Length: 245
Image 1 (cartoon, helix red, strand yellow):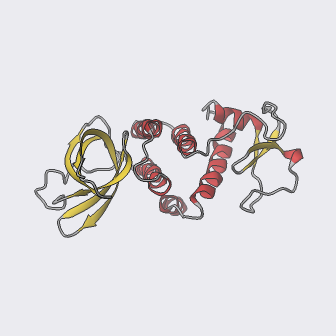
Image 2 (cartoon, one colour; image 1 turned 60 degrees about the horizontal axis):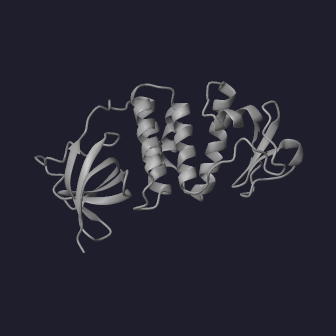
Image 3 (cartoon, one colour; image 1 turned 60 degrees about the vertical axis):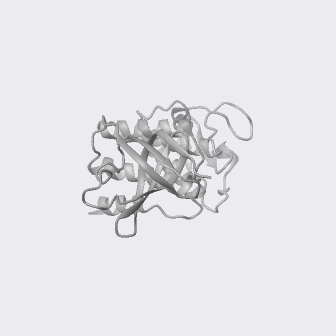
């Protein structure tokens, strides 16, 4: 049964050529989650949609259809977002790739949509990327059912202490280092060490401390790699190659 949907807040995640004149557009919407839309004729030079289907720009979309790939009927640019450039552009692609690889289709997560929009606004405004990326990553894992325990020890139930050293066991939580000497993570890697202050800072979304920024990045990298199940992130590879240059 064909269904018409209008007035949906959305962002473009990825574009795929389809035939000589059309595109399949992966979009992330607030009310319908991630889904593919067929933009008929969008590759034609005079197409009204050609200049609208841009990543990192807020859009209002409408579509129809009952199959797995719906047909895009309307796209309206909402404006107000500066274009990303340089490092921020690569970080934007990183956010998009996480959504494409980790978020199931047509699974709505309004909190994640809001976190994504907030992260893009911060990157477009030249803000520090560490807080926005970590907040987005934390929200993504929480919305997928992998929320982090950061302020309570796994085995004892005691509050994490700022001046103590911990390991974070995958899908479990923090354990004091003297309790897990020689242990390993579930995927066979060594449990990463991090300070209690880093865990408490992450719980409070406070990334002003350089050590917190470093250790939180290392922890989130391992957690996301685990939940990706070995699928590589191309955006991270490109970013590392550019840093080497």
